[in-house]
Amino acid sequence: MASPWRAVLTALGAMLLAISSLGGSYAVAIVVAALGCAFAAGWPALVGVPAQRGSSIVIAADALAAVLVVVISHSPAYLSLVLAFGVTAAFLQQMLRRDERHRLVEGMSATVTGIVVVTSGSGWILAFSDRVGDEAILIALGALVLAAAITALPSNTLILAGVAGLTGAGFGVGLGALMPNMTLLTGFLAGLVSGGMMALTHVVLGGFPAVNRWRVAMAAALLPVLVLGIPLHLIAAIG
Picture 1 (cartoon, rainbow, N blue to C red):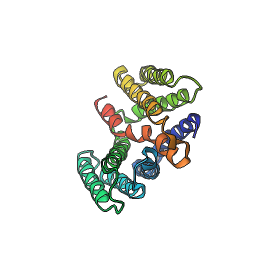
Picture 2: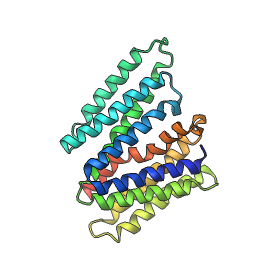
Picture 3: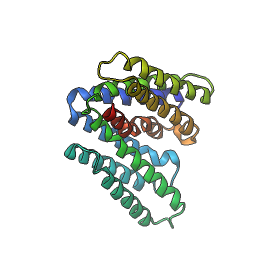
Picture 4: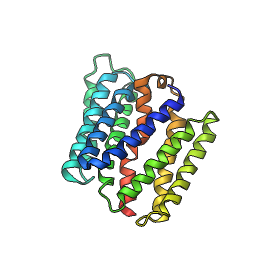
C-alpha cells in the first residue's frame, strides 16, 4: 500500500481514539483493544517471520490482557506482569512450532516487539484520566495526524521524516501555549514524540516489501498510534 494510504489509516486510527474519548474510559478501552488486535493480525507478516498465525494470536491476547488489567486496576503498575506473561507465551508459542523452528530468534523477537507495542497502547486509557490528559491527547493526536499528512507527500523519505518530527514539535508548542493547563514543555514533548514516532515509522517500515498488502499496511499504520500510549500517559502525568 502506498505511503499516502498508510498515512490515512494512521490518521483514522488517531481520530477513532479521539472520538472514543467522548464515551468514557470503557469506550477508549474497546477501541484500543480493537486497534491492538488489528495490529496483531498484520505485524508478523509485515516483518516476515515464520509461524505468523501463532504470533498474531499471542500479540492479540496480550493486547486484550493489557486493556483488561488497566481497566480493572486504573494503573500501569501491573503492565509489567502482562509483559512477562506475554514473553512467556511467545516463548511457548515458538517451542510448540512443528516446522523445525527455523529463524527462531527472529520469530521470538518480532512477537515480543509486537507485545511491547500493544501493551503500550493500553496507556491511552490512562492518559485520558490524567490532569492534563485531554489537552495532551489533543496535542498528541493532532501532531500525529499532521505528521501523517506530511509523510504522505511525494518527496524524499528522510526529508519528510525530519519535517514531520519538527512540525509535530512546533504544533505542540503552539497549541500548548493556548491551553490553560498545559506548559510549553509538556506541549513540546507531546508534539515531538508523536511527530517523531510517525516519522520513524515512515522511514523504518515504509521500505518493507510486504507493506503493500492491506492487512500488513494496517499494522504499519497503527504502530505509531498504539506505541504512543504509555509515553503520552507519562507526559500527561508530569504535565
